[in-house]
Each structure stands twice: as C-alpha cells, then as structure tokens.
Image (tube, rainbow, N blue to C red; front, side, top):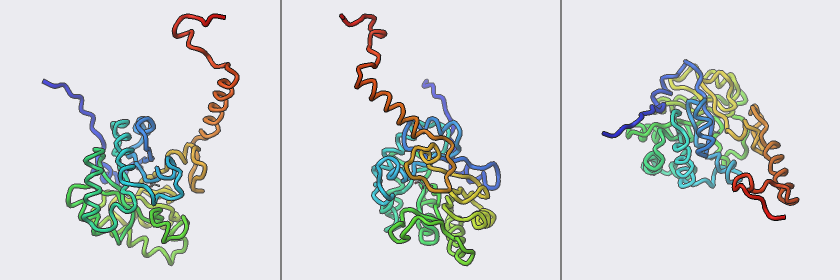
Length: 274
Ligand code: KIV
C-alpha cells in the first residue's frame, strides 16, 4: 500500500467563496524559493507576466512567451503547497480566438499543474472566459489598467480618473463576472470606482492600486520588497532589500579581491602550508 500525505491546496471555488469575507491575500512569485515563503502567508500566488519586467528586464510584458510562463509556473508549483497558483496567459497566447485561449490555458494547466489562469480584458474577453470556464479552466479576470495593451493605451496611467469614464470599466467588471470568472484583478483605479465595482459584482475583486475597498489585494513581490528599480507609485514598500543585497555583494567582492575570504580549512580539517 502506498502512503501518501495529502495536502489540500486552495482552489478557485474556495477563492470565489471568499466574496465579501476575509480579505484575499495575493502576491506574485516566479521561483520555487520565494513561492515557499509566499505560500506560508498568502491565499493565492500569481505567476504574473510581470516576470518579463522583473526577471528579464523587458520594458513591457508584451515579449513574454507561453514557455516562460510554463517554466516559472512549474517552479512555483514545486515551491508551494497550500496557495492557489494562478498563471498569467501572456500577450499573444489567447486573444486571437477562444480556441487559441483554450489551447494555451490547457497547456499551462497540464504542464504546471496550477489551479487557474489569468487573462486581461473585460467585455472583449467575455466570450473566451465563458468558453474556458465551461471546459474546466478556472479564469481570473484582469480589468482597469491592462499592461499587455500598453501599445494601444500609450502609458501606464491610472484608469477611470473622472466619474464620467467609469462606465466601460464597470461594464468590463460585469462582463467578466457574468462570463464565469472566479475573481477579477482590478488594476490602478481610484477608490470610489474600486468600491463601486466590488459592491456591484458577485465575484471577489482583487485590487492592485485600487484601494482596500476591494475583496483582496495583489502586489508584485519584488516591488513590495524594495527590489524593483521602478515600482508604481501606489506600492507600499514592506522591505528595502535592494541596498542589503548590494552591500552583501560589495563585501564579497572586496574580500575576494583582497584574498580575505575564509578558506575551506574548517571543513577539511587541514591548513595550507605556509
Ligand atoms: O503580471 C502581474 O504581476 C500582474 C499583477 C500586476 C496583477 O498581472
């Protein structure tokens, strides 16, 4: 008889059931090691396509490929046990048709074993969201500022700044919820709109720069740790690890250059001849 210890991961339905309840805690991670730390405190780990900026130094998320997402999604699954892992569908892997979206999302689920995918767009992606969810793929939506559309948006400005421009964003939220998404990321919208959307749809809203009125929050891990050279203005830094890492690298380089670093004697038990 095989002995298995079964650890139950959170699922998309668990997150959906949190609507209006305890706030949903979500952070990004792209590596097994950071995933194991994030896993201790978060409900959801997002393998975001922001890995294009953070890991690869791209200016935008547009160059990110499906293969990159699958590789890092797999690493995050290996490093975590409890959180729901959501992997972003990258630009160009889902917009052409609902069939293309199914093919890409199915690859992500089969090759990483994660529990859900995220895609950007509201009304224009509703048919695709319905197609995926009807075929066993849980979808997290993403509305407001949608960074994959940077080339048509022109800048990463906050959305819905004037009340007169709220209509399309509210319509996006409703379309995503009606299509069967289990939750929706709302990025860079002012508090009154974030609150209005949260009160008007039946799925959890997860804000990023969208206020504590949402049902949860997500941040890019490296931004909140103070490791990103450029982070959005709304990000609160909970750490300042950049300077600490630089200091450690500097000490190491100085010791190696002056041959002052410890040798292996304490491990091998013998000293070099004088
Ligand atoms: O890619 C990402 O990290 C994201 C978050 C900013 C929500 O989509």
